[in-house]
Image 1 (spheres, rainbow, N blue to C red):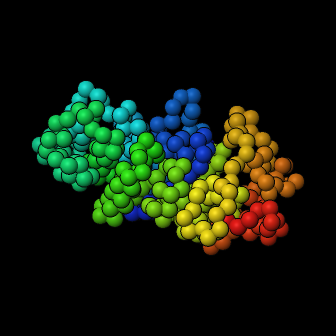
Image 2 (cartoon, rainbow, N blue to C red):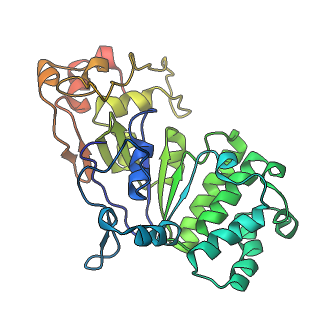
Image 3 (cartoon, rainbow, N blue to C red):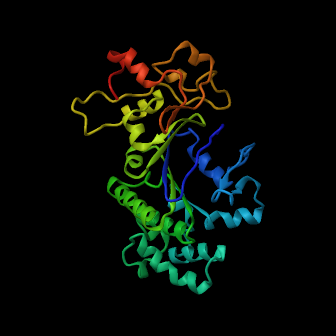
Length: 316
């Protein structure tokens, strides 16, 4: 992760997308200072809070960071089966998450378990609170993880691939649940995913990452309608669209993401880019504004590339 900078407003839902290895999960782990060794935060700031009352997560003491995690920011991991203790009942684990941060008394924490399970739409919550994780389906385990994450009423919820291991029907239910919780509780959400359909359904703003850098960001509708970085354009062309009148072959992005221990010179995407020019091989472009509210890191914007190569590129 190199030079990544973005903000999330209160009540906003922001999507971070990209291939595996693009730096999405490391970005999320950095916010909670959970980057695994030998990784570390070498420089920069992670500011949390309102203007004038911001706290720098990087400078927090061990006690402060423990209070920060779960109280101010919570995280939902992509595999709830490995995130929950298999020998403890689900209700106990949710209660324990509240007790650990001492925001509620033991009785309050115990009384909140069933309402939390009910809020995330788990049927028969009184009975399900007494079940073990293996007695839950995949979708129910993910809902239980969301309940655990929301139990301390955090201001920011980070969801790391929350629908990856779920079938399409359950994915839709989880998306609807996150949307309702965001609307009803005002909790800001960072959604990390490679599923662009989930981003389109849930997020107001999207950040596209490649090789540990942000290559494009802006309002979701604007990015989907007019992507300006070739990587974003390629990602959108690689998924089927039902609103296309003329169905073309899906695009494949040739090659593999670069080895970040030995990245290529210039633009990090140039070895896989069909629109590259000589400048791309030598100079890395800055992240600059290409339209109001939209930024891209590219020397050859898609509006120019498509105009120059209409027959080869087609329309997005």
